[in-house]
Image 1 (cartoon, rainbow, N blue to C red):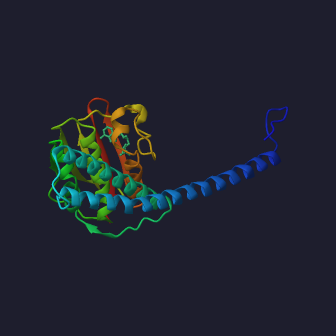
Image 2: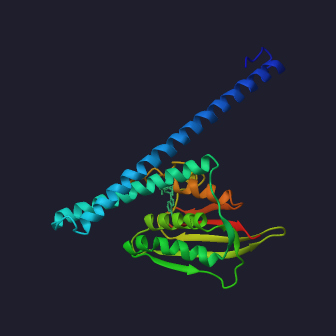
Image 3: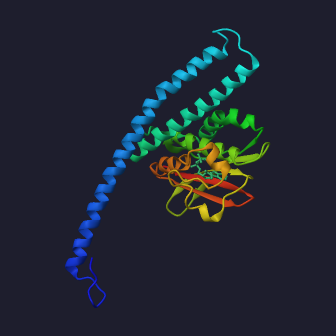
Amino acid sequence: IQINSSGTATEAEKLIGQVIILKNITQFRELDLAKTNFIATISHELKTPIASIKMSLKLLRDHRIGAVNQEQQKLMEHITEDSDRLLRITGELLNLAQVETGNIQLHYRQTQPAEIIHYATQAILFQAEQKQVKLETNLPNELPPVNCDLEKTAWVLVNFLSNAIRYSPDQARIIISAGYVTSASNRFVRFSVQDFGRGIDARYKDRIFDKFFQVPDADSIKGGTGLGLAISKEFITTQGGTIWVESELGEGSTFSFRLPVI
Ligand code: ADP
């Protein structure tokens, strides 16, 4: 838009400006979709060779190919850890592609909050044991069921728990809780994971749910992808819920979501 001598654009100029912006947005969406499809294809293609590496490793580790010495054993442990990480990253990329193309398959059913928490804690036990974390559960007796997809909802809790473990010192305390929240017109169940780890700088709190965002420090970048919370947000909002974080730098964080009771 050209601004005239009085400093304002004419109506016609404004209209042309709007058309140009709309065209740009459409092109941007097309590009974004092409990128998402590319991510989906690549991550899908990567899954098979990684699974095959893991299978060969298992044969070696079970000593089916012959005995291995201590050094070889250590190397195999490293390869196992790295291939697990690769598998996690490709899984997250596939999840992301699913949510971005609106292809999330949700299997709704009335689910007890205790079942979701049990499902998630079982999935995280190994990681928790490795850092000797003390997992505490604080769950009231009488909570109504929520209408949700068990796997996707538990996935979000697992992601919260996995982060809480990664960003806390060894032997840390982590509390999983749930509670009933009512307002004049709505009823919800809230799920929270509280840690006493390093916390999050207020500057970054709004951005950690963005795709690929990681707090710029060595700990974050070393282990993760910056996708977990972005996918979590999509999983919760598509189920009609809300997700948020409260955190104090150096004190710890509480990640929560709530889902409607229907
Ligand atoms: P990542 O795979 O990097 O953990 P996430 O999307 O799960 O990706 O998290 C985004 C960023 O938010 C992380 O890189 C980390 O900097 C920060 N973060 C997430 N959870 C916590 C936590 N419990 N304590 C401190 N920082 C956290």
